[in-house]
Length: 369
Image (tube, rainbow, N blue to C red):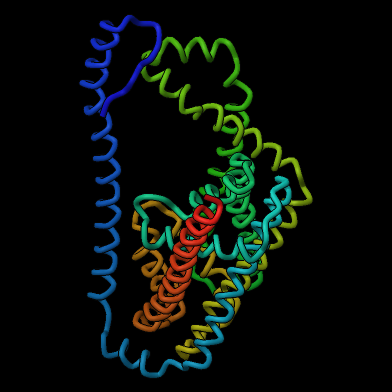
């Protein structure tokens, strides 16, 4: 791979500099790829170890018994409720996009949401679901900063909606939860809340100081010229400033934020109902209020970047939390697997939608040409 450095040098000097740049570049790029590969392998290893530990401590006879006693009609109702979670998420996303003056059809957003699930589950190492959603919406609306801001705010308002669901349930029925569950929920909530606050502080500081002359001077002094030119040509700092500014502007719009948070509350209630219905299909005698705390806690644990897309971590968290109310590990693990199958089903639909999007684009290009 070569880099052309077009200006400020004579032809012979340009060839000499190109040789130097070409010689140094392979030492940097493979290292970055190696780091990504190493991180993926580590997360994959953690995922395999977690599943190995789960299966080692599992009674397969109990698992088979739970499968044979699954009530298919109630499980089908659980799938319908799962579809409703997609609709609620799309409404929340549409609300935030409207605040960014990006009008999008709800059906298209549902399709893109499933495409995002497909990328998250089947291509976890290359491009996440949020990235692909931001890309397609930003490209269609010609407003990538607004699309990125809506995606970030969807996560943040969803987090606050989750807290609104979990903490009242914890306060009302705190005697039914073990100390480990309570401390885990409190600790992880504070951690994620600190990350949210840190995101806004970083966006504020970046938007305010990135254009300061002393920052630009320090930037010019510390970075090599070749790196500076690459960053300037890529426009990464301009895009980061646009996204940071848009994020801060979005945070100053209380009405869309409140509406999106309410959709987040509705989403987490429906998600808990989704788990609860599958639990009924598996004859799990666990009250609904327990799910209102357990499922948000599972989501917080699965958010930790130590496994591939939360696989293994999510299942282990479910088994641990439901063991505090004496649910057999095999039954809880089957509940987790049923939810995994539901997400893989939505991901498969998203992959099909993605293929249709590509074929429609080619058809339009052929017609216009």
